[in-house]
Length: 285
Image 1 (spheres, helix red, strand yellow):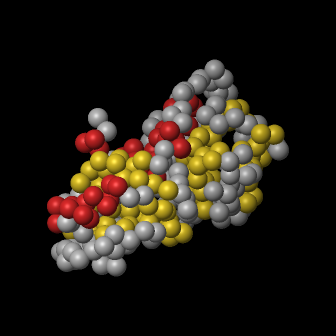
Image 2 (tube, rainbow, N blue to C red):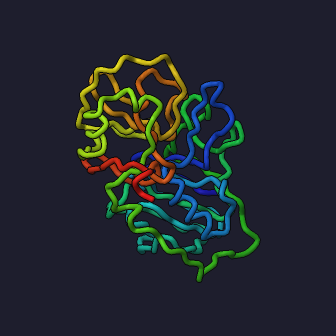
Image 3 (cartoon, rainbow, N blue to C red):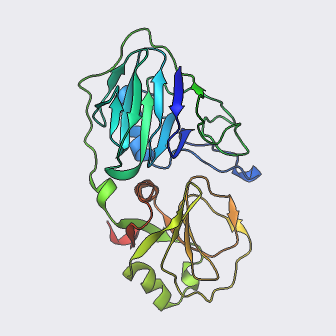
């Protein structure tokens, strides 16, 4: 087991999401950055659906109650074991009683802690992903106990490596497709979406990212229609809202763009004040 000594800013258990229940209004949820989470699981030899701990900006402090192996990927939040810095994207053995903690945020925004075999917390609708109203807990709390498998022996693959895409954390470009209501925009509005830069506002979380700069909008609201992670909505006030993993399943704002899956991953590593630019996927081939 793993005991939560401190929670950090916002730490949750996530896997690849809750699929097949959107008709009932249940969000997908799942890890915000599937790329980084998959790196951690692959390096440990876990199944791709294994649940990981998603850590946002400020990390928790955890005490391990058994020997196991871990891997930390994604943002660099200065992870430490017993106050000694450890490397990202590398399988590491931990012993019973070891404490992992996190320090300063160096780059990125969300880190992922994988354990051998994955976390074994509450499973609802075939997913371990925490979400308020679906699971009993929507985030970690102090003194929580997280169940994990106790391996028969140390499986840490000490020489396992993987090349990390640096641009995943540095690029400002977000590749998108045209949304269902894109053609209703004027030529000037369409050009503005791709020619001007945008800034992530302080209103950013697992449900949606809002952008600071408005886009002139004279479109009529649409009949409530389906939305999904990566849908870019345009509000009557001209606010652009990018839906993320915990988004609702329907919405009434025009859907002007749709992020590629890789773009959702990239955006999840950005936070307040970071610049982004939309880039048409058809122009990136």
